[in-house]
Length: 316
Image 1: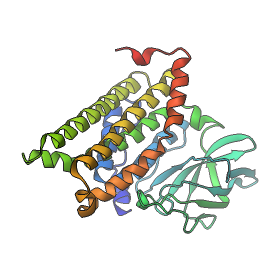
Image 2: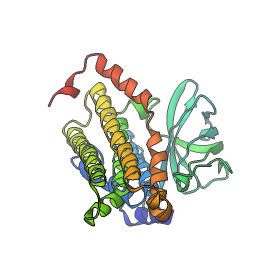
Image 3: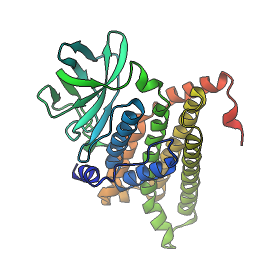
Image 4: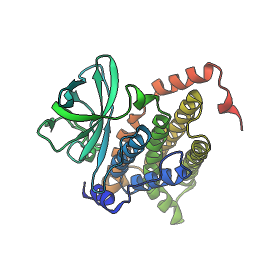
């Protein structure tokens, strides 16, 4: 994706780090990237998350022109294994869900060393790292190129201590960054509905759909703004409250994006999906991107956290 590499070369991907006083600017930039193009937002979010992880765990910073991915999905199988040799660390195995497989220049990759989960920085332009052909069949998010990667004794550099990738406070700050991208993309999905009502020719039902979309996206915007302020006020935070905040914001934004997709379709019918290729692609992309949420599994985890005694989520 040329646009992504251009943004890296010009420094436009160098966003404020979360918890450093300008987290809302970070979220706004991510939303703007996703509003321009959902896939661009997805890949930009991964690169900027990698930069935040490297800063938090002492791994240096991406250089201009580099594009980083964060490949941390770990289904039961297959797994990537890490081995420490006389020449350094090596990774071997297959990693699924590698967004930007043929686009990224570097990636942060989780791997198992014995029973420990560790994070490694890996340069990707090496014969030891190969995209798996024909492993990404998506229609929505097709251009995210999120297929599998094979590692064969690939040179890797540890980033942080075992378990640090998930245990750090920034893990949950990054989760909200994904929601900022959902929000930006959903705002653009809503644009044709707004344009229809702005003509003055929409009936009351179409206008009501716009009102419902505006209120849902307004709630999403406010939740992102409040989260940004909270992160800047207390970057480390209590682990449980940090986790609850992220899951609440993601649920609010996911609901808003889902409402937007549904109501825009009901208000405008099939025409924009069939006659406006950019809108049709955005709807398909956002529909798939939202499934980066774990749905009811995330809500259940949120419910358990709240049920264990934290009631701050309910206070003004």
